Image (cartoon, rainbow, N blue to C red; front, side, top):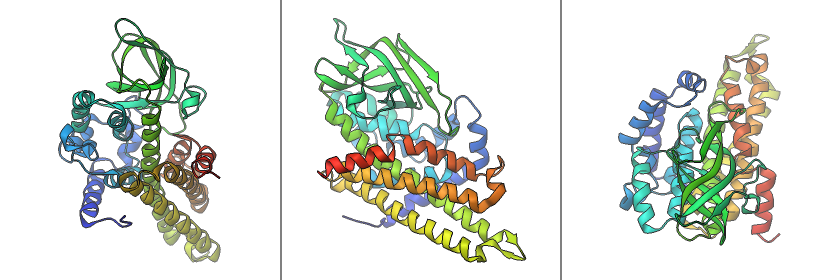
Length: 370
């Protein structure tokens, strides 16, 4: 198992960073987060057609690049660094992987090419108003009928739910929890925006009133859902690691230039120690995220525990770095004009997305038999 990026992976990182620096600077992030759509379709089209990023981890047989989770993690790390406003995580890290894990060959061939090309946007709907991300918390029903399944219930915290062309919905059917494909324009599908702490990432509530749906693969999709959520936790860890790294760089640079008592505040021992502690937290978090991505590619039997371990550690580190960065920036860190607070909000929202750190630590204990 490799623990460092290859030359090709570093080239991918440079290209993605260059693109995001040019097309998604923080000024653009601030503009887009105030819009109902929350992303720029032209940038998404370029990202898909010129760089092929939506298809990074989708097999070539379905129109993707056929790379792995290590490469997908690098893309997400750079997007987290830039606070990219776009439907990438929901469509690629959630929906595409759910289809790969649960769908039949015919379903994969029908659904994945449009996701790989960026022509369609999808997402995964799992959590409900109870906020749980495990199968036991799923109350939405899939009822069998003459014309196929119909879905009844409510989903919440649906990433990119307002703009998705179709959904992969976790619902409880006669054979247990399964995954179902639902068109976004199907009768009985109602979407409502949610007001959240992080305006750079749009969430929605999804109401299902007898919406027609197609079961993905076996009607009992609990194992496929669990695998998808583990993969997503590993990828979210990489995204959070990118945001934490950028935030640390911004804070260290500020400490070097902010003068107090005739000298940079970074020259004071208290600030030096604080920055050193944050660097240590960030390096440990990034190592966990990289190892989780490597497990998703090369050691899938280890992934369930490692993905939860990474999600818990990186979430804690990101939020800690964000909070301490605000303190180092002083009063300026609390102002709307300073970008630090945008990363703090993303860190707080990412902490609970896919489950809080305490939930994932419990999963680690269960999966390691502690």
